[in-house]
Image: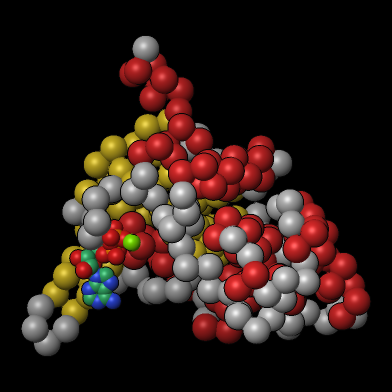
Length: 234
Ligand SMILES: Nc1ncnc2c1ncn2[C@@H]1O[C@H](COP(=O)(O)OP(=O)(O)O)[C@@H](O)[C@H]1O
Ligand SMILES: [Mg+2]
């Protein structure tokens, strides 16, 4: 079975005024080690899709199985454990805590771990080094550039060593050159074995992906692997 198996996924947002069908039945199987891009116009359901994948929003119907675990069959507590163990999140607004240093921000996901704090710090420093920020560990977010803040956010997502990273428009607020550096970093991490699912509206990012799924109006409208993309181009 694929690492991620999505079947008949639907999400409706219901209010007294109306009902929005954000996802209208998505089926997708993702192999471990894939760098998957999720694209599509604004409002097509990308963020909804990613939140469901991340265990942050219950689907209206359908099933999500990651590494053999039926996510939404888990209770709240177990789902929270799953998120901590399996997932790293990277968002467009990096969500760094402004009064904590880079290394302290990276240590946050380790807070619940029974581990000596010196060890937590060492691990956080090691991940900061991995993303090229060893020299900035003691800086506050306000003392870092946008690209550096993004690297801190990536380090924080990696610190628990999750097998799966979910990213929603992670380069959306960066200039082109910095965005390229960040995409190259994601690519490297993927080459090391990490599965990455990234939502983006930027077609420039497409060449970094192994596979690109395009959502339109809550459905999968296109699904191409990089090899097919290259074939189509040439
Ligand atoms: N919490 C919500 N309540 C009601 N409607 C929502 C909510 N979140 C998203 N939607 C609607 O669902 C659709 C898909 O949204 P979203 O998943 O954010 O798309 P995208 O990320 O592709 O822009 C849109 O029509 C949006 O307005
Ligand atoms: Mg979105």
